[in-house]
Length: 173
Image (cartoon, rainbow, N blue to C red; front, side, top):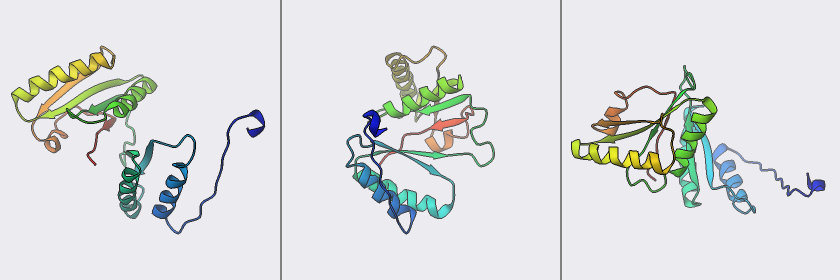
């Protein structure tokens, strides 16, 4: 690739564990001309590694990196790869990446995207519907994009909403 005029760089890292190695690699990548702005981490491989990933997320945030956490369902994996529930919190500081991921999955799977929100009362429900419809229009989401608003606590609503193959959630730092 270098002979073709394409910038190429490589490095090797040795470490005694996942966390130490992940921090070293991330800090090294931050010094590259095209450094990452998002990390993709997979949970569910084993409990001790999941705990290390939780610690690594703190490091990523201190480096001002976004974090995408992925966890496969132990039995159904990605299900039928057709439906994506995209949970949107009103006032969330950065929903763009979540929307892009939802759109990409919808296109790759030729599936369906749902915008989801949990609210406390009827007044919030009306506001949420207005907000999600506006978001749908601004983001040029397909007419097939469904909006589902559930009333009640977020954790309780997870069991009462339509099932999906993937749920995308924003997390607070």
